[in-house]
Image (cartoon, rainbow, N blue to C red):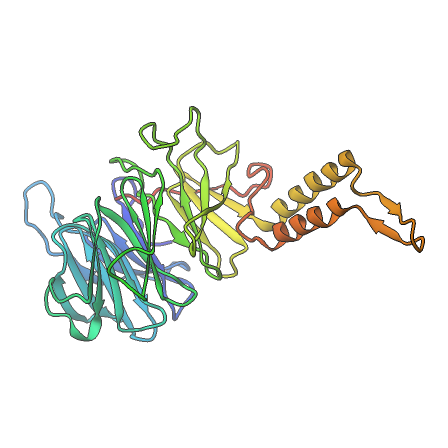
Length: 354
């Protein structure tokens, strides 16, 4: 990708262009919002934060988050002092308003309702806005107060009717459009923030109401166990209950970011300078191997002869184990690489910085 500034720079957020798959909208720590081309074409700067004019540096304000709407042909970005800027996809500024008291960590259009916008901030709030009627920071549709600063607020991709927020300590929340005033589920989860850690953000599965979030074990968190693993935790978005945990013994770092591909059968996880790829096919094969071994050890795979009619009947345990196998094959979230090194699926990357 062109336009990289090298050591000392940071990326607040990136989003693919809905019009050209080789282009990315990039919110950068150098104070620019740019459209970059993966094929090496010239970078287009579509917005630039004001120069602070200080003697030893010229950037006191920078963009931290970005989203783009194909239907609105608009780009929205938030900066580190609470401003939110709405622009056309060509870079023409529509409005710039101070909608939060502090850094805007996340901005997002609702994919099913083009005029609905969510913003999250370290001022401990998430706000939902009507793009057709934004005038000032008090002109929100709904205010969702939190107990800690908020890293992200994602609308559910399946129907846009839920909102998933992650704070900077130990709480994941699920809100529903049926009543935005209070969370539908509060999920206790250790993911505390510190200065040099890419903020941990819980995200949605693209096809099911499932939630994934990296776990950063905390001795002060209820239920903590010694040598607790730094897993990727998967939750049911409809109940708030944990579905499963993913862990690679060869990857012991903190996993801050998780993103499914559009089909939902592959998960990419950002961990330090590495990207982990969890593949469904390898996990299913591993589950099959364990299941067949268990069936052999328990003698469940054998058939018995019925005394009536001489028909062959399966041991009752067989159906249960087969059902488990089927569920494993269908559970796209229970998928990971058995050995990311042997598969060569670890790629060098770099943490997105605050």
